[in-house]
Amino acid sequence: MKDLKFPINFTFNVTTISNDFSATDATGKTVAYVRQKMFKLKEDINIYSNESKNHLAYNIRADKWIDFSAAYSMKDAQGREIGKIARKGWASIWKAHYELIDQHQKLQYHIREDNAWVKVLDGVLGNIPIIGGFTGYLFNPSYTVTDLKGQAVCQLKKEPSFFGRKFKLSKLKPIDNDDDERIILGFMMMVLLERRRG
Image (cartoon, rainbow, N blue to C red):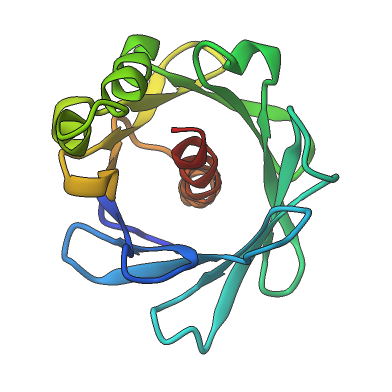
């Protein structure tokens, strides 16, 4: 995933039993196909270069058993670590907060949910018959990546859609290609975790 054309769109497949989605760039080209292995005690995500799944490009795996604040290692096809994404346990109860760590184990970026009330309203109204089917059009959380100086660099926003199946990742300022890769992989893991949480 080099020299990507933003925005990147994540579209979940609702016709499969696995938790999987495609990532396409601004031209509509598929840049990744993400598939979560089912029935694993540890999160295990494979990222392929396309939907044919004939070329494994990356893997993301939990560092420990299912845990409240686990870290997830991101590796390329050769097993080289690109970085990690770590969920901030207690800090994420109200408002999602993750940290992106680089290949040298140094904190590089924060990912924070922009407005926790959106998720609360979605959860409450989503349980009401009939109305619940439309919350995917009404409540769309967003998550912003900030550097260590507090400057916003990227934002992921859920797009209005039935079943909450579409997300758009936009770049807010220029960053290195290596950082693009780390941020996109981090968001791929985060969106699976947050979608499961509701």
